[in-house]
Amino acid sequence: MKQHNIKERLSETQRAYIAGFIDADGTISLSAGRKRKSGEIGVPMPLVLIVNTDFRIIKFMKEVTGVGCSYFTKPTKLRKDKDKRNWNPVHRFQVTGMAAIELIEAVMPYLMLKTPQAKVMIQAPQRGRDFPQFATDEQVEFGKMLKEEMLELNKRKLKTAERLGTA
Image (cartoon, rainbow, N blue to C red; front, side):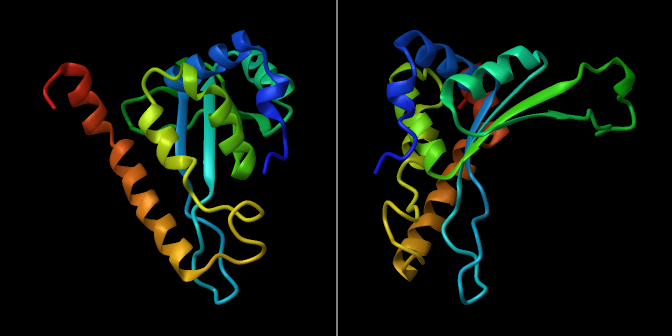
């Protein structure tokens, strides 16, 4: 069920361009998920996030895809030895839910590094595509399994080891 027609909105060049940013400055993930009627956490929410210091790029992503949100994020001091006065402002383009799945399906042929994450993310059960209102217990469990798989794929140690050829 395509709601946003992202693939049809984007040229092949735009799809490749966006895929490059996802590979370089992006994240493909599954968030914690919305609460179910019972109060338990439901299926995880697909998430695509691109972070860049050039707001023109972030604004472009929002304009050409027609989905998501673009916003400025203040630099935060993560460590005592870091001086945030030297940091550039950071901007984000964020897409969630079925729009994130559609975006990833549109750019997947051009992804070079994050294809495993993309393949996991598009399997996440979603309202409107896989169930009408509330996910079944089986769908919730499958979503939790996918989230664990995604967490393993997105571990920094694993990516660093693979890049260095020590994995």
